[in-house]
Amino acid sequence: MRLEWRTVSRGSALPPELARFAELDRRLVDAAKSIKILSNLDWPARTYDEFLRGYEAGRPELPRVEYPRFDFADNVRELEAVTAACDRSHPVGDYIASTAESYITAARMLESLGTEAFTELSVRLYGRPEGGFGVPGLTNLDAAEQFIRSSEELLASCLRTDEDFCILPQTVADTLRKEIAPFFKDRPFEVVVDQDMASRAAAGARRLRIRGSTCFHPADLPQLLQHEAYVHSGTMRNGREQPNLTSLGLGAPRTTATQEGLATFAELITTAIDLSRMRRIGLRIQAIHRALGGADFLEVFRFFLEAGQSLQDSFQSARRVFRGGDMRGRIVFTRDAIYVQGLVFTHTFLRKAIQACKLDYPTWLFAGRLTWGDVIALEPFFLSGFIAPPLHLPEWAANRLSLAAYLTWSLVANRIHLGGIRLEDFLHLRP
Image (cartoon, rainbow, N blue to C red; front, side, top):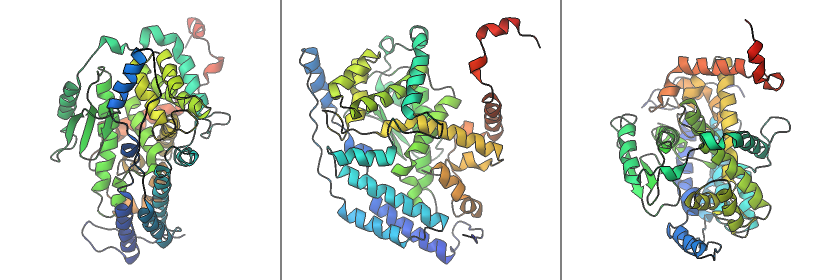
C-alpha cells in the first residue's frame, strides 16, 4: 500500500487513521496485560529444597508442581475483536493484529498446561531445537552442538568455577542498583532480592528482581546489567513511555527472539559474556531436544550435572525446560531454543542495517518490545514522530560510530573462511 503520513508532534491531534490505531492499541494492552507467561509458569522456591532432600538421600523424585487453571476466554474474545478491527494492509494495523494474535496463542498455551497442546503452542511461539534459521543445513541444535564441541578443549582453562566464588544476592542487588541508577536518570528503578524466586533474575520496567538463597559469580554482574537491566528493562520502559503505542511496553511473545537476541548481543559487544554463559545457552537447547524426545526431568537434570553445572544450576536449568510441561518428558517449554537464533538474527540485522546506511535501526530496536521486521515496517512512523525514539539507550548502542565500525568490520571478517587456514600458516606469513 502507498503510505501517506505527516509529522506527529507529542500532544498534537493524530490523523483519524492513526487515532483509531492508538485506540485499538489501548484495547490490546487492556486485554493482554494479564496474560503473563513466565510468572505464571514459575515454580515455588521450596521445590528445589524438596528435590534436593530426596536427591541427597539417594531417592531423587520428579518434582511435583501444581499450576492454577487459567481461563482467558474474555481476553481472547477482545483480542480477536481487536485483530478483526485492524487494517492488515497498514503497517501499524498489521503490528497491532500480529501482537494480538501472539497473545491469543500465549493465552491458549497457558490454558493447556501439562498437555500436548502446551508444547505445540510453545513451538508456535518460540520454535524448536530442530528449527532452522536461514543458513542451509544449520539448525538451532546444530549451532548449539557446534559451539559446545568447540568449547570442550577450553574447559579446563577458560570455564569459570562457580564454587570458588560466592557473591551474596544482597551485594549483587546493591551493586546493580548503583550502576543502573544513572541509566534511568531521575526515574525510579528498584533492584530487590526475592527469596521465593526460582529464576536467577527477572526484569520489569521499574524493577529488577534477584533470586535469594544463591551464590553469584563476578561475571554474573555485567551480564545482568547488560542483558536484564539495559536491554530488557530498558526496552520495556521505553515502550511504556510511548505516546501512542503503549503495547510496545508489554513484551509480546512474538518479540522474544528479537529481545533475547538483542540482550545476548549486548553481552557480546560489551564483552560481558563469557564461555560458561555461551555454553549454558547451548546446553539448554540440547536439553529441550532431549526432553522433546522423551527424557524426563531427572535425566535432563543429570545431563546438566554431567556437563559441569552445580546441583542448584542443574535443577534450575532443567526447570526452565519443564515449566508448564510434564516431568515425564515430551511435554516441555521450548522458549530457550530461540537464544542462538535470536543472537544470529540480531547480529545479521544490525550488519545489514549498517550496510544499507540505516543508522537509526539499531536505536529504534530499543524504542520498545519490537521485532526486527517491526523496525523496518514502522520506519515511516518513527520518522513522523508517531513512535517516539528511546529515552534510555545503552552506551554501546548510543555510540553509533563505534557500533558502525564494529559491524562494518564484521562484514569484512565474515568473508574470511577459516576452513582453508591453519594456525601454522602464520609462521611463514609475509606482508
